[in-house]
Image (cartoon, rainbow, N blue to C red; front, top):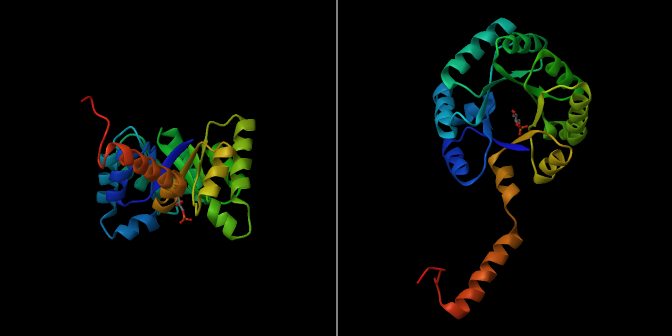
Length: 225
Ligand code: E4P
């Protein structure tokens, strides 16, 4: 399962990409607005940090197919290969997905709350669909079940569209998405940190150092001498 960062914090992205096997970055208008910087400048900086091999998913604001195409063209021109245009699953959005797919431009259908929206997006040619797990949970739905249903529908229908599950508030939601074989998840800084940490790991490392130093002395490392 691919793991992407759902942030536009360039310093954080730089550090995370250096340390971890991050597969890409997703943004949305809310995330970009938080930077209070020119949005294209931020997106281009993210592209330069993650390189062309990782995917970058950037969202359009328009609500008509015609203007979505204009925004998409601009994003692809500025951000290059491996860019996916995030388009909400609104009626004109499905049309834009079809037209962009016909032009060979990558599409991520976003703001997905139901499996049927995801199916419609896949039929329109989306490369990924992004179901909002936590926002579904927040309205007494079952976000992971929606992800599982989409994975099943895509497998049964022979669609190549991937499920890029989004909107997470905890590791359990991410873990369950990996169990139902989502192709990718995108997570905030907080959730990403929790994915890799455990207090017992820290306790174990401290104990190793303590036991070692009690015999070999403080700061002693393994070396050829
Ligand atoms: C990503 O594509 C979504 O925009 C994002 O994950 C939404 O997350 P939120 O519900 O935490 O805002």
